[in-house]
Length: 287
Ligand SMILES: C[S@@+](CC[C@H](N)C(=O)[O-])C[C@H]1O[C@@H](n2cnc3c(N)ncnc32)[C@H](O)[C@@H]1O
Image 1 (tube, rainbow, N blue to C red):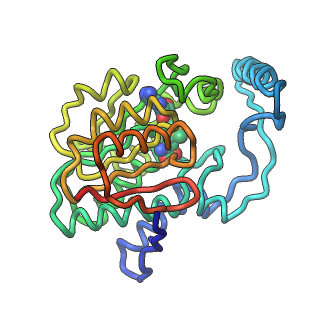
Image 2: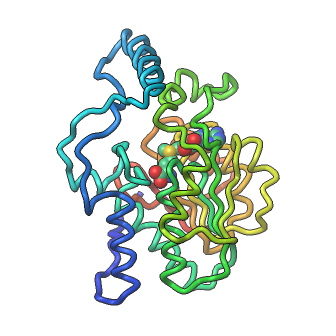
């Protein structure tokens, strides 16, 4: 795996300033955040599971009174760059390096006239997809469609048929990960980017993606964390990825996701080089 610097050159033109401002807003690197939801109590070993369950239960109970459990954080710019933190308010947990990567891919797609739409599977509050829309807007593209696929109800319980997902606890954190469609739509709208070329595919990937009305894809961004979620997206969407298009894997650092990607690539004889974006994400350009 090679490592590329994906930094986008800085300049003073309006579209550059707009995109930098968008990145700062979407990650909150401009404003900072003093608190964030307590992701999980720091417990390891056998007691971790029951403690997380109690935490989930108490958090759910508190939400009835509009309360949530937060922890105080020292805001760190490095977090905003690398991503991986679960921010309290930012619209994306993806860091600026991954946002730069999205921009890099879209610029390449437009420069080379690669046909197709853009899709993200796993949008959470919508931030990375919103950045796709912003880049298209800044670069003057008014023809491509952007698809946002999500359950809008969090991650599924592990499917026993996927050995790699057995024991996966993401679903137990759905009090943080489940963002309703109305909230995501409102996020897109508040940045002025909700238009008739934005589409929401609501439901589990294995139900929505097989019949998604998308002909061709130029940018395929996978951010579903688990083996099953990654495999469902690859199997149903990769065949639609145009030559010259990009496949981005946000969660390659997670064992299940990585296994799905490695299996899919090997089974389909995909030999394009994996390029590292940051500590977690990788991408490749389809030949
Ligand atoms: C890590 S979050 C995505 C982060 C987002 N891309 C961002 O910009 O911050 C993972 C998302 O994937 C969704 N998800 C995971 N597996 C799914 C599945 N099998 N079907 C539908 N949605 C799924 C979850 O609901 C969640 O919103």
